[in-house]
Length: 91
Length: 433
Ligand SMILES: Cc1ncc(COP(=O)(O)O)c(C=O)c1O
Ligand SMILES: [Zn+2]
Image (cartoon, rainbow over all chains, first blue to last red):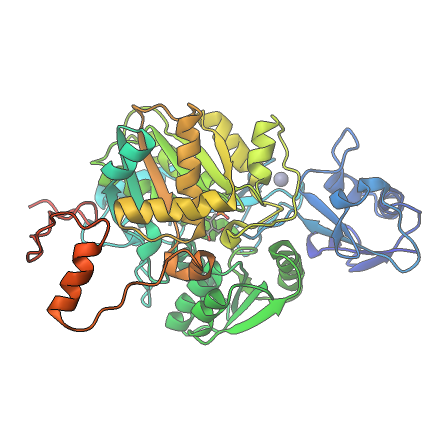
């Protein structure tokens, strides 16, 4: 089952968990299992229309899911899903 | 103190001052919120002190209200009229804000000055950054002067001159395999885990405010007047956003009158996510994989891309992307016409200006300001093969004259002592008597 790495700004709604083992075969399903377990995470990650919030960036094994299959990107046993705020930074 | 707290630039949620940079409600970026009444009061009792010839002249409009004791003196760089370049490009009035002459030779000294001062105020013991080079040397310089340890994370394949330009100040430099976006992702995770002050991540709300001073200085150097149009190089998109904010603040405070300047941005074609989004009419920015000689602008996933797009649209600006050949040509054109040697980001800006004028996005009668943000000596390797070896003569007058007589472009130029320099343009304005 894939692991989801939780940033500190979400740990308040995951009872302090830094890492959560999720269920599902895609990134979208894995996140759904996360928000089922921690309902308060839902509104932090998703807009009211169900779309991912624009400043939430997701990576599977260090690759941006926008270069993969988006929320439909398949994930398996040893995959790591990283949730981070849209890249800060600037050269 | 004129800082009221931090505010989410997406949903408006407010937070107290701290090294927090993301809204817990919506993941949006946080910005400094001011107590404008306190700012106005401060400006009446103590306006911009004309004897301070650094960006701290505008400290009343910054989140740090006192000049740090170990400051390096970033900012207050010259604004030059650029008649020769204007003529080449087809503009009536063009000005160049020459930010290549900052303490570490790029505009990044402005943002770092704010970030390091903030770190010191908050008692943060270690500073750090993710960088494509310019930020690394700016932070290394400021940290050295402040006596703070610095950790700099850069792409492992960065140009050697950029590594050297940071290493000389004695920081810890870590090369990270991958692009800048990979470096940045790692740094976000480190910032999350360690209590370090990452100037462009968790200190970003304070850091970013430093770029407003480019707008403040421009207005003062134009005699407290506004330009019509400005052209700004964009990577993460913060600089363009904050220059627009700077003009807006002066308008809101009644310190200058007129139309809000139009803000146009410049990117390299090999990394132009903001330009592409503008051209396609999108309101989000699709990430790209950078491939350009303009390494300082090679951010494929711009943090403030959406805000930069909004800035372009709200001010009636435009956006242009230029090829690597155009970048080199831009560097040479600027040096040849105005005597300013810029790094690749400057070549991008000059070439984009030319394109924007040719496409009619900038009208010939618009008073235009070009922001040249980094020094040419930082990217000399990009110019490899561009200068032919000079002729060599014996140290004898006859030998020189033999060469001079055959020199193809030798006109009847009389050799005589250099003339008197013209009055200096831009720079620090004299204080009134
Ligand atoms: C020389 C130079 N100019 C312009 C920029 C663009 O600034 P921003 O990332 O805020 O868009 C950068 C760095 O990012 C830079 O190094
Ligand atoms: Zn928010």
